[in-house]
Every structure is written in structure tokens, then in C-alpha cells.
Picture 1: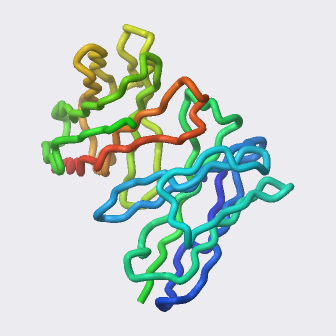
Picture 2: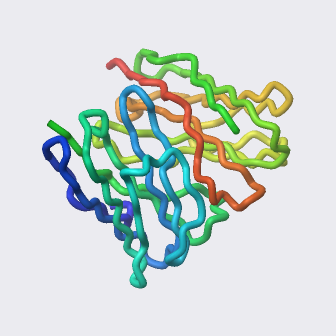
Length: 114
Length: 117
């Protein structure tokens, strides 16, 4: 157990729908990162929150949004889902944005859009 | 923008052999960090080893070591005495030092390593 908790582990939904993925960072970590892993795009950085504030955006679609709450858990909202959104979504955390020792990853949420 | 290239989509070796996974990267940054992550079938991303670009000494962690060639922008991973549990996807990743890593990690496409009994 890495200490980063992601729920749900698996999610199957239909095109056009909206889903919310949840992440609880490792205890004490203030930074949360979201990544998407797909067969064609590989691992891509989506967005980074630090202590409740957005710090950086990567290749995140406008249909996707995220937030980090006062208790530091984060949610990734995916709307108007398309078949191509099917992927493994990872959350990672670190104490600060400067993470020279890397991040701690959760076990991911497998999203299947049908 | 940074790019990370792993030119070996898949490799297979016998148990106890030594294997080297290749990684090259492109960046205009002078200070940065490099990582190798392992993703076994459980899909958990596990940090294997890290290297700070300003350190010339190659990092080692037990059976894992790197060959970091900054001028060539090369960062290969050597696994000695390979074990069945080393079977996994291995990802090379880059992080800028300036900016504090806020932009996250840039990953390569990965190398699927299979250790044969």
C-alpha cells in the first residue's frame, strides 16, 4: 500500500456521461497530480494541485476538471465522455511541488467508456 | 518542452541475467531529475531509482543501477541478477528542477521487460 488511495478501482460508463474520480494523498502530502495512461498516448500529466490551488496544467481536455479540497483529497471530473477517454487514471502525491525523490502513486482507476 | 524516448518496446531475458533498458531525453534545462518507474501487472507505479542531473556519480539501488550520460542525454537502467519479480513495464521519466516540479513528470512510452524462468 503506497498510502495514496484512489476510488473507484474500476468504472464502466456510457458515452456522454460524467464521472468523478477520487484521490486521497499520502498522509502529510500537499501536492496532488493527475495522470492519464492510455495505450496510444502513454502516461500524460493532466493537472497539479498544491494545498488547494491549481499549480500547473498539462494535456487536460476542457471536458475535464479537477479540484483539491481543504482536507487535501482531490477529485477529477470527466464529462461528456468519449470512447477515447477510456484509460487508467493515476493520482500521485508529494509533500511539496519540488519532489526530487519523485511522487508516490496510487493504484489507479480503470475507466472504460462504452 | 521535454521529450523522453524509450526505443525498446519489449525485452526478454533469462532469470539471473543482466539486462539494460535504454532511455534518451531531450531538454534545454541544465538542472533536472531523472527517474525509472516500474509498473508490474498490478499496475502500481513504483519508483525504482532516481538521478540528479548535477551529480556525475551514477545512482545505484541494490540490483538496479543507471548509466547517466548528461552530454549524450542518455539514462539507461541496468538490472543485475534479474528475478521473475522484475517482470514489468519500465518507464523512464524526466522532471525539471527549475519550477519545482510543478509541471509533473514527462514519461517515455515504456519498455515491457519479461524475465523468463
